[in-house]
Length: 374
Image (tube, rainbow, N blue to C red; front, side, top):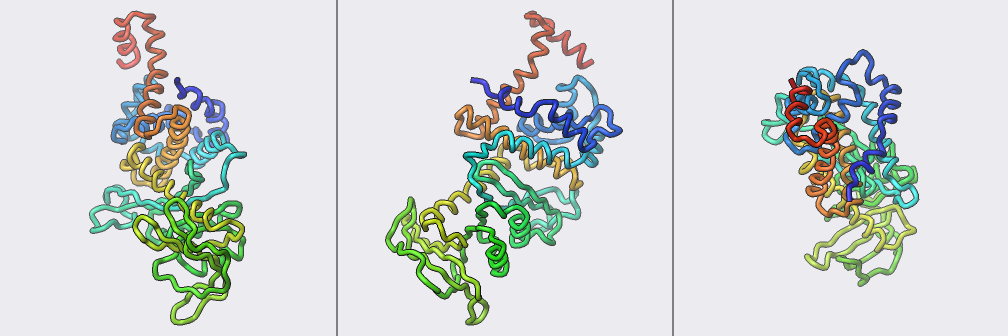
C-alpha cells in the first residue's frame, strides 16, 4: 500500500496559499516563494543527505527546473516570516490529531543541538568551548511534538526556567509530565495554586514530612515496580524546616535493579499505579529526540541567525508529524525504514512528469533533462 499521497493531501496547496497570504510570506519575493521554500526544506530534511545550502540549491534545480544560488536561499531563510511555518505546523497537528482519542498530556523535556562556533558566536558555550549550542525545550502529547521554545543564550535556558515558562503558558488543561530538571519548590507551589496538574520525579535525597496516608499500596506491583508508599507530604527546606503546601508522594522500587524511585504529583484522583504508568510515558520524548537527531538532519543547520534555525526546527517538527503518521498507517516499526519508504513514494511523485514527458520511450529522458536542466 502507498500512503504518501493520502498523508500529503492533508496539506493542500490552497492551505499553504491561505497561510502565506495571511502572514505576507511572499511580499516582494520572486522565485523563492514560501511554498517553494517549504517543499524544498521538507524534501531536503527527509532526504537524509547532509543538509546544506549547496544541497538545497541542487534540490531546487531538480524540483522546480529553475536555477537559484545558495546565497539567495541563505538570505531568504534569514527573513522569511517564522509565523508561516508556525501556522503550517499548527495546521498539520490539527489534521492528524484525533481530538476524541487524544490524551491531554504535555510531556516536556529539552535537548541541546551543537553548532560550529563560527555559525553562532552568541550561542550557549559547549563543553570545552570548541563548539556552541542552542537549546530546545519541546512538549509532546506522547506522539507528536506540539510546542517548541528555542534558546540561543544561557540566560533563561535552564530546565527549571524553560519548563516553568512552557507549563504556565500551555499546561492549564493538560497533565504536565517532566523530569528532575525542574525541582524548585516555589514552582511546584505555583502550579498547585494555579490548578495545573503535574507528575515529576523527586531527587534521591528528598526530605519530607508525612501529613497523612493517601493509599495503602505497600507490596502492590506494576509492570516493573513494587509500590512502597502513597502519602501526602510537606517537602523539606534548607535546614530542618518544611514547606507549608502539601503534595502527593509515591515511592516505588524497581524490581529489576532495586532502585528506589520517588514520584511527586498534585493529582489525587488517580491510583498510584496510574500515576507511575503516566510518568513512564515520559520516555516517549526521549525516543522522539533520538528519532529527529538520527533521521531528520538536526545535526546540520543552514545558517547562524535565529530565524534560520527556527525555520529549520519547525520544518523538522512538520516532517516528524508527517513521518510519524506515515509510520502508523504503513505499520512500519522502524523510523529509519519508514523514512526510506516515504521518500521512495515522494520520488515516484517527482518522476511522474518525467514519465509523462517520455511517453514510454526511455531515450526521451535525456531530452527531458536537457530541456529542463540546460
